[in-house]
Length: 517
Image 1 (cartoon, rainbow, N blue to C red):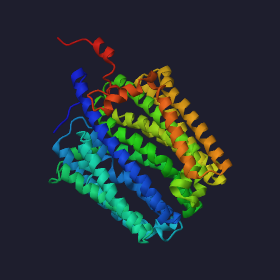
Image 2: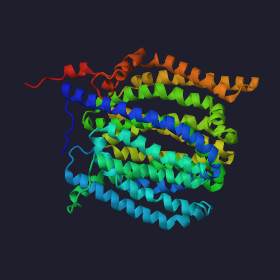
Image 3: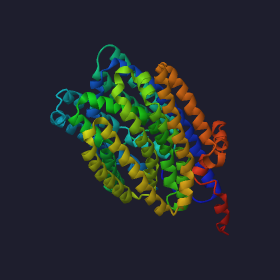
Image 4: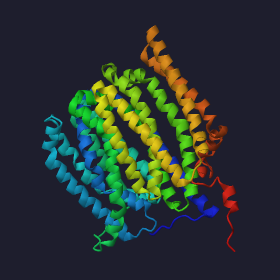
């Protein structure tokens, strides 16, 4: 079952590329389907469930995420990143995940009354107790999901994720229609996790007798424990504003703020994590060749800044119409925070890939230092800006995310020996298209309000304008070769833009290497 790192021979790298391409295809298919369904579900639930219920679940989710990373102990990442993996490692990963998940379920169940007091909301306690079962449920599928990712069987993962979402949130809409309110949201998360766990274990069975030897547990936890610490700081950086809004402004304000984060974060989250799931195992196999890893990073940033920045800045410009049409008129206080946190979504998307790079090459201490630095800056910004209400929290969050991206990029350049001129070149198209997208869609929003046009009609025009800017901006990415590189992907050819992501495109460098006799 052991897997060795990929060598430098072209045929070996091309084999990895084909796997990466195939995996990305299924991952993005699942992403597009789930994102479309999530927009529909979000619109339905926003009309059936009160903002306070979303705020209550956001509070519970905050507590759960507080322990989620330690409940997993980075075991999944360790199984994916490890170069040589034995059956004992997989078995140890399964039983450790189940045991730790069970302990955290009991822990959160016990402290739920204290959490309710901390948020000054007694209704939080029963919701949190039931949602804590997600630790136990997820623990049963950590190992099987990680092995499927390691083997790059993303077709099975994509199918599982889509079915689990449909079952979980389809049931949630039905329960919300029947008047169950917050419990429909609780049901959605638990049901989704349960369906996914059953499917993952059916596809890739990892259940076996517990491993008695300590070595496999030590191998996984040595890497995974540090990943958990880093993930914990990432959680704080992502949720410190949510924690303070919920504590000081209440559930209703948190509901508004949470929807602003969700609407802007959903597209870029799926856009970035869909590829990072595939890139992580690919870069892990290339981790001893930092130059190729650096070239892969440039290609990823070029693509995702070219696509992602016009998307998030366009959403900022069209925030009013998106909120009114998708969420409904009563969600007006969400508009201003949404305009601001859209910037944070773009920075978070790009820094996400820098974090994946550091994890793949086992530079975890650098990643940890960056997260500690970010949370210190974030806390200071919240201290000074929280007096300005939801807009102040949003500005603090966006500023901290942008600063993290800048500092992280400096470290990536140093580690992979990249040239700053190359980095600035790959960022330029996305920045130009992003600014143009924001200006155009914001102007259309103002014009629509001035003439009294229906929000739905203005949003339709903004979507068309945003797509036009995105397409024109794509001509600037890689000298206009972006579309030519995407065409083979759409036609399911053996070569695609991901050839460059994993380094096959640098054939000149390959030819310069001495051949073995």
